[in-house]
Image (tube, rainbow, N blue to C red; front, side, top):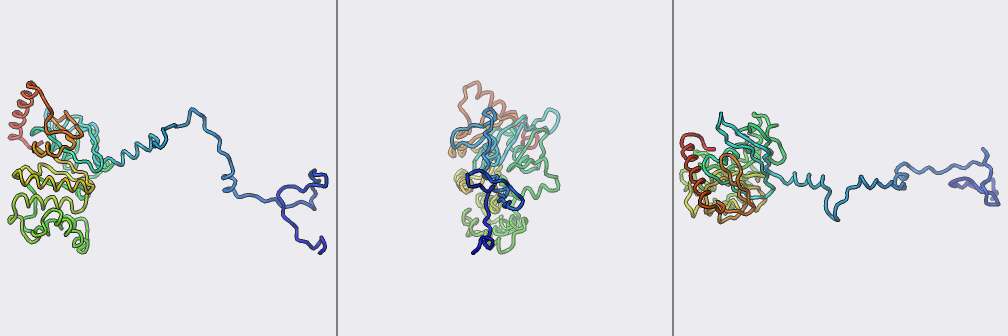
Length: 329
């Protein structure tokens, strides 16, 4: 084959002459060069080292502070920051309350009547708005929720009341199913969900009973089942054992404990001293609308000297008298 008939070979860069020096380039013997795509060029560049003053150094394996803060915020289910609630001149339900509750925590709110326990519960279900401060649930500022949309928000929060609040003309099955119906669940979804919840709460044999045919403990179990059936991230219980005998109260607390172990954050406002001491979970104590104690594994009451005991008894007597005259705080 003659040179004139051979296929030209592509080369990168200029040709070299016999002596190894670059040959003079002419228009006739110019060869096309290979241009790398921009992506390949970027991968071949060596990044310039950042100035030492701008580098963020952290121990090996530890996340950067910004990432750690973001992760911590995602873990918070309840957050109150500087929250105050005034019912009227000189009538403070809460005063500059700040605390946070993480995912899957179980927290007891304790304190005398009028100390602010029920006010916190009512703020968390947006039944009340704070006079000042911020209330967040699952990272959402509740002040941003319009009043007309509050019922939709409450579908994501389970609530257990002291007086049960069951529908008297509906069976156990229908009372629990109603909590799913309002969220738009289909009959198939309800039939698939309810058996496990009723079995967990010990109500499998009471499906067709009406509330008036149940004991107080059984009615409270229905209320707990209804609050938990949609597996909310937060379950609030306001005096769940207030109307129950000690033995029945233990069963209700064990049920709430199982729900907590299943992944739901549980907050309980209670006067049940024995139950709080038995559970040994986080305790937040309120007095006159302020947090006076926050312990990770606390008792109902901290150790106190004679003077502190006398002061507390006087406060409880005054607050109890006030509770008779006014709404529960």
